[in-house]
Length: 439
Image 1 (spheres, rainbow, N blue to C red):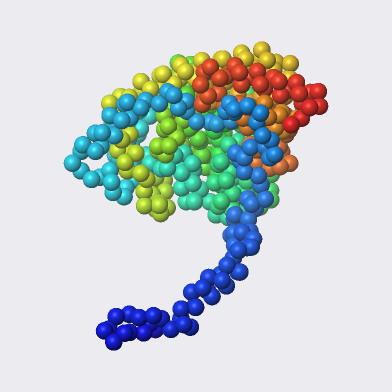
Image 2 (spheres, rainbow, N blue to C red):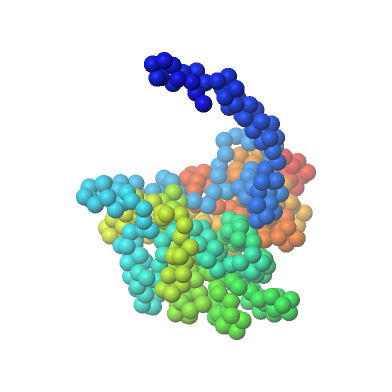
């Protein structure tokens, strides 16, 4: 205990107590300085520690010129509706209520907008009670699997699929199985066989995850025939479908592809979506769309004290002003043009080394390399030439499935005038790899 002076003030501590803090600091440093973080990670995190980061650049490669980014799946930053967003934010600050500055789970106007839009576009009447707001589509997936999945439950995914969602599933200890894709999306014939094989193990499938609209990374849509077949298999075997339509509004044709919840009236189908891909990722505004009884269930799993009310109330004003429809129209035209420029440039500069199908929406071109070329080698060498790509092996659920012949090109983020140059550099990288000059 510290000593008191004659005047009653706190004086100098005893020397033994004075030394206690440095000794404790020394002992703590000895104990934790060289700690293996794997020793403190829980059992669900430990398997993830051995994997490379999903977005890590190739190790040891230094670009010889400033990078052009075909690896980033985010909206064009030059096309942001800054003025409209600023006007919406000013309305939030001008409002006398403090609702935008308290804990909360979104602005009710956003759920009302989603319900009205879905009912109008899909021809199925729903209300705001069919929607729960989340921190992006990834937050929507997270609350769904934390609510439904026990460790060891089987989730079937497409192969390939978005690697970020695989982290959601691994984080709850799911038993992840996969089914391949083709130009019509998830192969439902192989899905039916996989479900029966899993049941023969004495297990059952709890959830099937599909990116049904403009798939990441493949760019394809699940055909209407495959959608019906998937619903039939789900009805027979009793699993839920998790339908990710984060790219669904980025169609290049006349209308959005159908969502599976339309055909099932929401029974057995949980849909997740987001404003991230159509507007801005930093807003972190996504949602779960499901029948109200499931939405009520998911609301019980909300432990994060809500989302950014400031963002949500700004979005409420943005939507009320009709700005999203105007912006979405511009973005569909822009990304269609960017896709065309990128595809034509790839055919011009690298057509001898790769092939692909042009997507009808979304952000991505999924490239298959010609025989004899390694995707990892092209990825590394392209980085050296100054263009960032996403190697295909990272999108496969299991190492045994991963191929070394695919690359994902994201044409959405770079300025239009960089796309042809990026393709030219990719062509150079392919030529280098073909001649044995790998970075």
